Image (cartoon, rainbow, N blue to C red; front, side, top):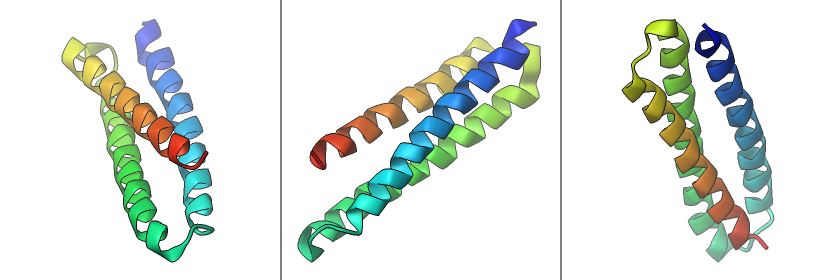
Length: 95
């Protein structure tokens, strides 16, 4: 029964942290040169799309509850891992 409550909550917590980082990156994009701005805004938009997809996966997982298949759990975790990698990559470009 622990999976029904804690796994979605854990994943939602991770998603909130990543969402905050994405918003921070979006704010930084506003301060970039115009030629770099277009490239960076495209990256931020891809991160936002990934954030939305990860949120939808978490919602599916929560609704499936204990009956959630291993594939659904793995897919949800993978979506968050991929989003995290994308956020880290984007953050490195701003350093």
